[in-house]
Image (cartoon, rainbow, N blue to C red; front, side):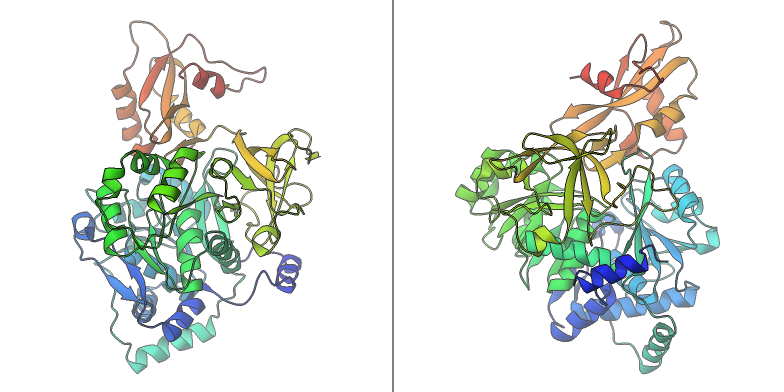
Length: 554
């Protein structure tokens, strides 16, 4: 599977932005050059979550383990070019799946553990996967059971039942078998490696195909912008299913010889213990956690964080006072990061923007020829701002418009969808985010909001129209719509606004949540507030004006 045109491949190869390396070739290199360095580490309480012991693998052990896994998958019938859905928590086995998929030329499509049969069935209809890999247990969930919503039961593979990890040396016969298969089915850096899922700019979940080269370009951006160093130990608290973990940790780690320590779901005491016990040098944390730690210095000082060099954060404007506490009192640099599955990448580092108040809300206006921003990080990816209505490019100080990107990190288009309104006529991806051009000389972007109505609940993107469509079937309602309302912890939560047919028969929040659960909806999408209204606000074309609903909830 390939999405990039020959012209695009040639242009980016000639510019030195794309090359011949793949995820698995980089692992093999690290296994040769740094065989004993830690590559993948489970969180210490893994057994509580999965009933399996935590693993610690070096680069050599991870290379061998993914060889064994590739052979197991071949024996089970998985083949080059197959599309494979994977629903595993953040465990070393998931990392091994990525490397095994790379070795076989399999297209891997990772799923958040929060997704249920309803969501997976919808995504499978777009992906048409041949296989599903799931965990036998994660907390109280049996993730593998979700696989029947995607593929036939005979093509559902269960971790630690159908296969497991081994790091003992491969016998010569197995080495020869895998080598022969890979020679007969070579993997190219421009082949699609993964299909992650995003709400995109329209609200419905969409597959984002990305090649090895796209991911490696994103990995370089992260590593340079976050100033990774060879031998770093990186603590990843994000589910390894999208840009945050793949572009932020998996790919740059294998490019730069860094170890990845896994964590998720976020458990603050465990997270802090891991930073200390594993001698973490870099991690990423949500703004709410950083704000809490800045306000509770006694909590911070319970641990030895002397090896911790920096923390990244994002998804919401950062508090300047929080940055000041971390950098001046704790001696830990704070990086502001903005990105997406489609390949957006902006990083505000202390080097680029020393002033904490500027760094808290501003990003370099890179890729625009601005004199302040020179070097690969700022010049390999182009950006511009357009008027979202007529497409005119905006460049004056104070202009507000839609942010657009082009370059080696950016994908080619959504899976199985037309690209109308996704790209500009000259090939720039339209992010759906509004930005202001600001700074003394227009050298910064400030994120001003979203053009679309996607609800961002703690990093999980929720399509309001999907929930609307399900609730339309609930009896006793004239109209119903969900919208966001602000929350200090998660950024946004979900409210359901109802127009009941009669005042005597108004549903409760529990009634609607039970109805959605019976529909198979994932729990993270359930509304947490209900509001009765006389009518839904609509524009002349009948579209619900969700922002007006949200405004009433503040």
